[in-house]
Image (cartoon, rainbow, N blue to C red; front, side, top):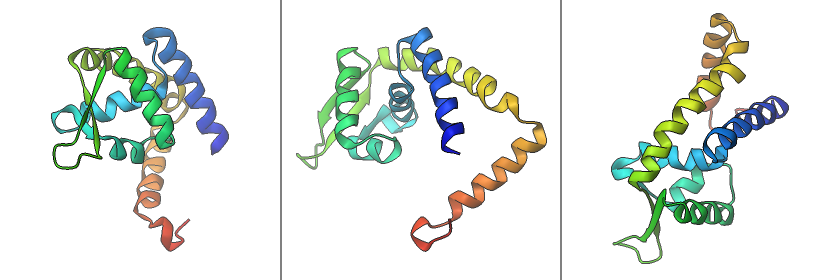
Amino acid sequence: MLQAHARATQALDTQMRSEHHLSVSSYEVLMFLGDAPDRRMRMSEIADGVLLSRSGLTRLVDRLCQLGYVTRCAAETDGRGQYAELTDAGAEKLRAARRTHLRGVREVFLGRLSPTDQIALGEIWKRFLATDPAGGGC
């Protein structure tokens, strides 16, 4: 499973870097922000969703800020909390990159599975995600 994930991610990362000068991790952060209410999320919420350490996420968001795709601000209710917010330029970059990412997922992953395989895999993922990892389901 790890080898398949690494191979697919590497192919998607290469495609994303080539066409949009974004890593898959950068795209993922833009995607989370683009799908969030008001296009903003707490940094801690983003960190919970991506496969990066908190310090790695901080560095990545700093780079996205330098590119003008994201801004950072303090939470109004909690001075210690930080928000990341998608800018208009970030939303435009996300729109273009999302098309490339979806095409890449179809080419790199879904295109190798029959419709029956895709349905079966979807059912497996549902069962896996419904299992409490702390309860020893896997």
